[in-house]
Image 1: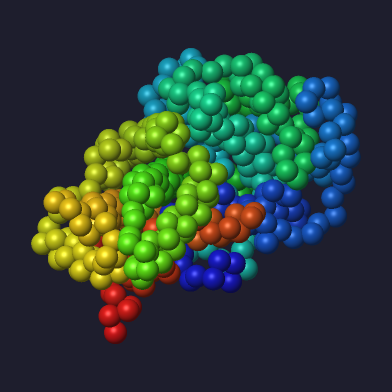
Image 2: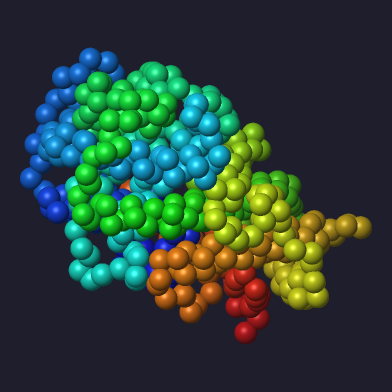
Length: 464
């Protein structure tokens, strides 16, 4: 209903990041976990909320965006058990990552934030979930809200193409707070961070530096939270597998952007004799590729520098998760996991089909002339991209299969496709579809290309 495409629950983490799944869920106070930041925004519920201009010194001071006092009061009420839960999760991941008691890196802290934000996701989904959902304990929703802001800040640091921070760069709590304050990250689209400075500093000191946590180790947790944390090894595995799915899905769009760049260059140079009908096809496809390219540029994937910046934290996320998992599927190294398999006879057959269909559409143009006509480059690009899609889809299916087994929910019956992954963009605030090359070729040229992890097929809609 939200995105116009049915997707089986067994593929959920491949589409909605594991650290965002709990956003629309309710806690026992009747509040949504994501509060005003709920994604998808169409699932946001109206709740009585006390909003107030921010009185704290610094970037937030009396900003036009208000602060959520209701959420702040809940966080303060549950602060002590919230910190006690943080201690247990941090200890578990620290052991998994074989870290000493010293500082963590930006990438490791991002992992910790993702694991914390996956706590309510695991509880909601374990055993196939419940309908209606059982409300979450406010300790979990408060812990999520505090941590999710830190996760977003760490994400921004690694993915910023102009002021990039490397995932393996150590960062103390004081430096992280300074970055967040100076970069305006305490101010969001729906409001400002409601936490007073001393509580932000206390939480960061505990999460980042591991200081002043001993006093929380003997705190008695509410039964619901204690029961969830009794499954902490499984929860951490769930979160790490989800982080791998997130990194693999984003790698797919990065691979696609390179194909777009190459195709745009080819079609920008393509010409035809005056009056030749196929010039219309060239012009139409060229215009569509450029329009898609604008959306790709907004996602900062149109330049090779930007793509490399994005791929560094994705590789780090995948490989660090693999190291920390108790029984990791697939390859240990990210490039090995997403590497396309060698071309086989079916790939050669698809190449022949594509060459025939494209030659018909572009007859009379310079795309089909010359010792090595550009149409051969186009076909090669498309087949290589299909192989990339298959490799990444296979890796995603392996992660989702492991997740489904872990949370004890049914495995999907329908194969996963990139059109399923594209739903993630339709769920975002603007709801704008992200370009998918296969859809563009279908809509402009009438070439229906279907691709899964194990199969692919080309159908020429105009041939009939």
